[in-house]
Image: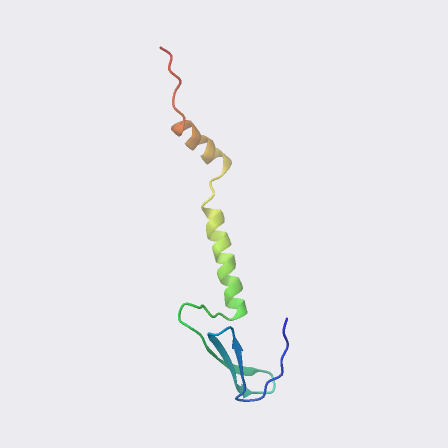
Length: 83
């Protein structure tokens, strides 16, 4: 992790596209301004974690249980020829 010290109105550049500026420094918080291209998503950490958890939950809900898989495999298995 890179740790830097910045004063009000000072900036950081990440890569060639992302600019972070210290807008305000309070007692318990810092207000940052972030400029980035529209194709780069920017989330607060807690929102990002919630999105990740929702994605995991959604993916798990798409996995059928054992009984469903067995029923599907019976339907899809061709009957052997008895001729």
